[in-house]
View 1: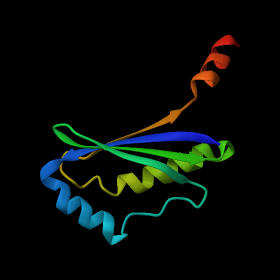
View 2 (view 1 turned 30 degrees about the vertical axis):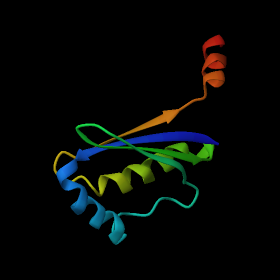
View 3 (view 1 turned 180 degrees about the vertical axis):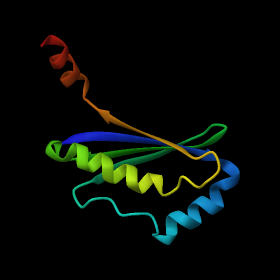
View 4 (view 1 turned 45 degrees about the horizontal axis):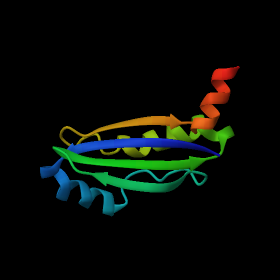
Length: 99
């Protein structure tokens, strides 16, 4: 399994509108093999949300496309931004560095 992080930011004054859309279920669904394992919110000037997903390594590309499709559905919101980042565990990164 591999992990992917999606960072989201949007202005506080758009929260009610954002939540209404989120709860409506209108955004595309994640692929069946994509599982959100964590979701955190952080304080700041904007609403900041950190999502961690787990998916099979052989489906990383397709999974990231599915995640991007879902998060792109919110693009019409003022100043909405998201970023997708594949993650590696520290021990894995060390092994990659050694090669």
